[in-house]
Amino acid sequence: MTDLDARTLRDAYDAQIRPEIPDPLPAGVTVQRDGPLVRVLGLDRRGFLTYRTLDGLAGAELDALIARQVEIFRRRGEAVEWKLNGHDQPADLPDRLRAAGFVAEDEETVVVGPVAALAAAVPVLPEGVRLREVSAREDLERIAAMEEAVWHDDRGHLATALAKEIEADPQSITVVVAEAGDEVVSAGWVRYQANTGFATLWGGSTLPGWRRRGVYRALVAYRARLAEQRGRTLLQVDCSPDSRPILERLGLVAVTTVTAYVYTP
Image (cartoon, rainbow, N blue to C red; front, top):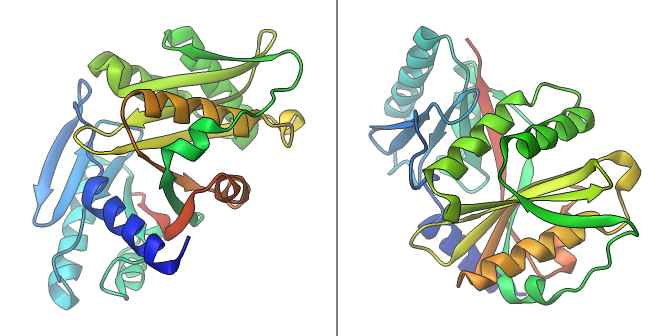
């Protein structure tokens, strides 16, 4: 892939993925607009701020927009995430968020690429491991428990959030587990972005004892085939440093970075 390809893919990401608003909206989720900014409430354990572009806001106007979000979530007593891409303007936006009390989480890389190459991959699973599509609350809670074991924090909200999405539209998301016997060793889900050519991959956390054995790669290929079956031509992933090399070997291209800036009252 050339630099031009990466820019073209980034433009498609900006035009088709952003702003990231659930469609359809799960029960209890509301969307509010504040100028170019979109507030999503009730989707997860914290609020979510998203946009395609800030429409040239800068200086005092931008500070006022940020301050309004801080005040809204301070009154709600709720944390909120501002999802910042590396190419967002103005360039001093990260400094302005930090000055308002937002704290940056770990930076991830946004990779985008054609579905076909990943769907054609035929990875070999370790002996005794199988992939299975799930939607039952019991299985979603098993996924949350696996993620808690990996990340050592509370992931109970994950089961609830996924259940809401599945209930709103089972055709918009597929959740897949990798199991060894009765143990969930990894899991991921694919969202089919409405009215776009994109599918997006999420999850992929894997228990330490099962890493570097092809489980994550198999989960990616399986979900890519699901996306291809639904007519999607591009995949997008916010990936960690661990998964980025795997995805790039499969043909995805780094187009920007993404960092969650979180304000906690």
